[in-house]
Length: 316
Ligand SMILES: NC(=O)C1=CN([C@@H]2O[C@H](COP(=O)(O)OP(=O)(O)OC[C@H]3O[C@@H](n4cnc5c(N)ncnc54)[C@H](O)[C@@H]3O)[C@@H](O)[C@H]2O)C=CC1
Ligand SMILES: O=C(O)C1=NCCCC1
Image (cartoon, rainbow, N blue to C red; front, top):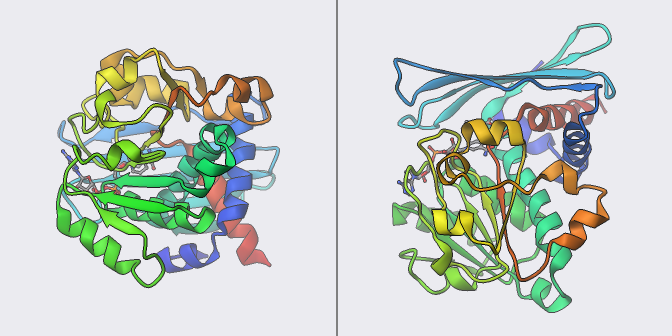
């Protein structure tokens, strides 16, 4: 009944997760009445950064209900802890309880990869696809999960890693050295290799902007993962507000309440990721001249997708 982080990692197929994620995000953005997801609750402890989060949702179309309860304690390691519970929505039976750290890490990175497919790969010519450069900022749990998912699902020409503490980047490079020989470390964010990157994933808990318009190239795609509070941000206002930037989010309702970059810059949101799925008009509006930003804060239907994939794989 309880699946720990190792069981989650071993049994959560990324291609299946990508498929179920696309389906639930598509129906979420279409306001499909069979899918219910209220805004999550974030209860802060003594007004500090430490918090208890609750993310429920019901999907009567797929026949499941899910609730993830996690703590976020940024000064602890790991920063996130908790469990995901999956239920049958026809009879109310509890089906599975699984480690939330691994589910959160993998569903978040897979959502970023889905955004990269829809916002970057679709607009690239073959040559850019064959020579694509990925940069990951922040080398803790999310940075590691992004490296893992992005390299399992796509072949990158080069990968650059940056972390505020360089040892973390070096350790991550070393952990992957037997599988990947194309990882390099960026010592700082003014390194012009950042400007050569086709895709950048920002995976930090920063409260100050780490990158601005001057540090990235025209047409870059950015997955901004880290911020989920008004006071947090990884991207500067000039990047958020440029007329060359198109901003996509996982949920407009959540992003406007939680995404620091969006609240602070008052940048306009172009669409939710789910609106881009099965939508040729939107895909055609995304062009190679524009910078695309997928700002995620994390929503319950993503955990539901992961829990369903896990449950159905364990049932076999
Ligand atoms: N969008 C989403 O769906 C999700 C977002 N998150 C958020 O993503 C971020 C990363 O998550 P984890 O790796 O689990 O957190 P973590 O606490 O394990 O790591 C935080 C990372 O941020 C770096 N960092 C903190 N302050 C910084 C600063 N001022 N400048 C540069 N780097 C800084 C740390 O060095 C560390 O590498 C967190 O803010 C977390 O809350 C986490 C889960 C899901
Ligand atoms: O969606 C999640 O799960 C989280 N989002 C923001 C940070 C904590 C976990």
